[in-house]
Length: 229
Image (cartoon, rainbow, N blue to C red; front, side):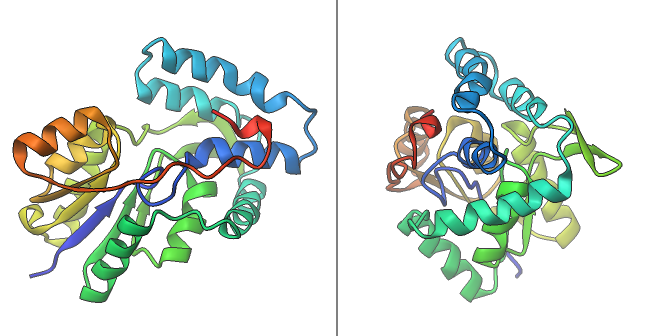
């Protein structure tokens, strides 16, 4: 029977939040003035601290790219990830599981609130079969600042169900890996959920339901002060 393994990406496979690390890199690469990253992201951090839903914070993040050329962002993403690779961005335990699923012939699927600039290089490096991220709206090759649907929370679970329907999979025999409470719908959608790290909400569910838990690792030290989140 064919099975799949679904993986969140940020702080599940890689030890940091790709969207913010990439934004800092992209602004630096573009020659933005010092302090630009902190200025652009300050409202996002305040919104998250104030309890604004994660999907809405995700939408606000992508508004920062309004007017950006999609091809240029993709090139910037490849350059960003090439630099990240020099520091070893992957969390050992979940990444070893990913490789094991590939060896067994499982369909490997990345599901992330991040977008193509960050997600595609990770997927290509790992050899993932499919990668689903938040889809920015692109017109004439330029991002509008809007997104189709933030791939956060319940949307991750719906994506797993859609993949299963397309590929004829029984989710009861599939695995999923996530590190944050927003991954709960994804984890609940499969028969073999695995919690990465110590998120208290997921840890409580894991203890009650007997889910497997894997250790996470702290994010690598930022390359410069502006990448702190």
